[in-house]
Amino acid sequence: FIFQKMEERTSKAVDNEREEIESYVALHGLEPQLNSVVNDIVKDRPEDPFATMSGLLLRKSERSELILGVSAREILSAQAFPCLQVSIVTIQGIFQATTGIGPFDGDARYEGRGLKKSVDSVTHLIQDKLIGKELNQAQIDTFLSSEPNIPDNVALALSMACCRACAKHKGMELHAYIAQLANVPDPCIPVPCFSLVNGGQFAQSPMFLQELTVMFKDMMSFEESLEAGVRLHRHLAKELTTRGKNLNTGISGGLVSGLDNPADVMKLVTDCATELSLSSCRLGLDMCAASFASSGEGDEGALLYNPARSDKTSEFKSGEELMDMYLDWLLRFNINTMDDLFAQGDTEVMMRFKERIDSELARSKERAAELAATKRKGRAAADEFGDDPVIPFEVVGNDPSCHLQIVGNDLIRSAEDLDRFHEEQTANTIVLTLRKGFTVTGCIDLAAKAHGLGWGIVVSSDSKVESGETEDDFIAHLAIGIKAGQIRAGGLCSAENMAKYNTLLRIATDETQYIPFAASKFRMYQS
Image (cartoon, rainbow, N blue to C red):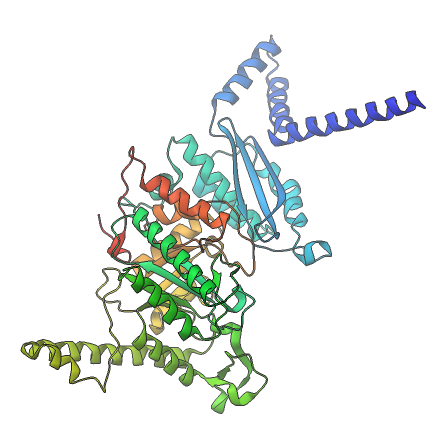
């Protein structure tokens, strides 16, 4: 019996060692590389094959631009969702990238969100085709984009990992290499837009506003902006506790307020900012209106909205009623950014909203001219217009053409969407996620197109509803390299989000390199 147990343990040890060896061989691509060398020797038949082999292996080692190994595995996100992590091996080391996007397996594992098929596609479809290729971002991304049947998450993660490897081989930081790829001579540290309060799909909350973000438009450094965000977050948490609210965290890392009315939340956040003397605090609202659009239609086929998620059709709102609510918020609060205000396809309402914004802007400018003309009346001049208030518009991000960032988040997912919304003039800012570009090169091209149209860019993680968040800080480097000017890395209640902010903080405070902060010029930054 004792000898039998010893043999079983020995067998297990052998199996474990075999697995480790096979994993090492696959990771470094030893088999195809050695086969290639042997084939060359057999073809040339040198007098001393061993001396020739050593020379070929030495030159292969010195050719540091080659991909030597490719592998993938499934890991878990902060929300315990499966994510895909890929590894690229070169002579300089192992370079990894992680993404939480699909396609998902749809089987019994992890409620259908497993990624084993994606891992298998790397092993059986992509691995041999990438090993031996030269590290060239454009060429690799072209290959990934043209390869049939490659899953989106595989292409994206491989592109990100290759980008890290290319940067290392060129002796550059990742953000500097991305700036070189994007032909951006003057990259900048983006202004952070913190996810402060979560609702809608981001929280178990009846509040239909999905996300309230804050930015500080007049802060002169990233460190000051980060500190202001932390102060406001903690003050708001304290105030909610004082009001007897249970503190929970939403998917995006923001607080779940326990308040049902978005206006009440905005009032509370505004009051907290005032108490902290953060006068430069500006609010951003991600409505994600598609999430509460009704399947039924109103008069003349117009979409209806059900923000209260009520069973009573009498509580549904038309696009016009939703528009009135948004304009009232703009009148009452310092809002400079609004996302996905209406559902996809509600184009007429989007265009009417833009017309009303233009009309209100004209009124605001006219009122400012009247007040300037009656400046000698002092306070009384402002009181004359008390019964006819106007929205206090201001120039956003040093862009004289923008007084409100109307953002296409879920609504704009491609260059074609960007062209359509630009032609309709129903948006002026894009939320750029890695998924929208499919590869790093695709993201750079989409950013260049948005810049060329005069649009603002907000770099963000991919949808946290559809995918999990990880500590991969690639978007921090991307935001710097493409000169986005703005970044949404989530709220301050998540270690995964803080990984991005800490990367930006490290770069912003690195005395060996100076990268300016976008500050108030976040839409139109020029060095």
